[in-house]
Amino acid sequence: MKKQIVLLVLLTCVFAGSIYAKPSKEQKKSPTTIGMVIYSNDTETVWNALRLANYSKNQGDTVSIFLLGKGVELDDLVKTDNDMKEQTDKFLENGGIILGCGTCLQSRKNNEPEVCKYSSLADLYELIRKNKIVLTF
Image (cartoon, rainbow, N blue to C red; front, side):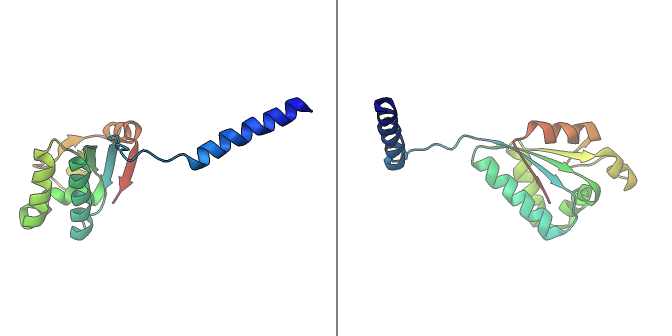
């Protein structure tokens, strides 16, 4: 009986201590890896995805983008939309990586994309496997 009471008191102290423990004021966010799959050619959607990518890079995160399906049309969007070009250039200048589905690029007769690297399904698979967070747009 005494052992049970001692154990109960000990557990109470441990739990009470954790309830009243104050979090550190200087909790540092550790950078993370983010993969983005863009499969839309909707200007607003793609532009916001790129804005998020740039913001994440500014926070110290590693960001990779894979263009899939209609998403490979980003190559055309940057030629006609200055805001899109600005966001894309900023991302690339800050060390961002943009990969484009080779099959999707070929189907659109774009054999020499300007903003993305010609890539494969294996590259998409690798992006999914290596990143802690994967977002789709």
